[in-house]
View 1 (cartoon, rainbow, N blue to C red):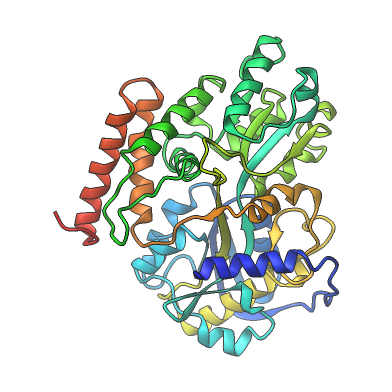
View 2: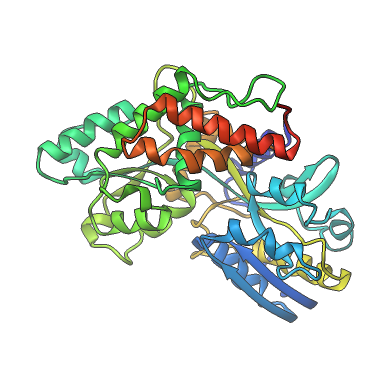
Length: 414
């Protein structure tokens, strides 16, 4: 069993416990510097805000969609500009490979007695991150629109296409599908989801040799292209934020979206009552006949920079530990994520991620060369999506770009 599957098992167990008593917040004091780099969705905003309340801190946070391009250079200086990076099971690999984050075992021993074992992410025997939430992309749908066209909730991408055609033909919406298909990281992640759903394997067994130019890869791209024909013409510029804006504007009826993003779609801010009251979440979609959900399971967590003083490392650890403690959980924050924190009570908006766990969805691979493939996919698939080349040529370009990078990094030989 991998470390991630151990984590998800612990998560699933925690989610079945129902109401759990937990202590009220006890405050926090930490003398030193705290500088956070991370993504910008509501759960992370809440953590950063609470961590910065610790007395004695010189604290700041940079929460941005560009965090993955900023965290590594921001941690390579000495001292590092950022004392902590909020990461996921994909992005921590690059930071470990570049040796910019420190093992946390000594800090856990001194300051982390209240951090449950299932939140401690170990790599090669060292605690390298503290996880605080689980995440996955699953179906979000407009209940009223599906009722208008007389269709059930889609359970597969094939059924999503049928629903999209029915909605367009009925004159309800011209572009009823949404998706985080922005060229780059987002487009690559949509490929990853769909490719796994088709039963694809990214690498030759036991090696770092890429293997995506195959039947599953072509089927993946063909399905992504078919879906895009029901999306906004600007779909290659739509990340999660832009896709959510389209949803709140009432322009989209079906999409695959992160569980951490669904809370803002179901509240009464930013959209008409007709939209938010009919916004529902469901489990991950299937595709083809593999029987594997077309999504990936993720954890989000935080690290501590290596190139900072021990005083700042201790302050950062204490503040971030407080930020993901039971003191975080209240009526506003409880539904922002599937928390791994003691005291979490599942909310209706969490149903998609919980269904992804129950369905046996695969975790995003944590092999050290996966990031190179993710980058190659993000750079090479846009031409196919724009109709400029075949699926086979796009996948050949992906393999060539990945192999060049993997050779340079020493993962494969020529």
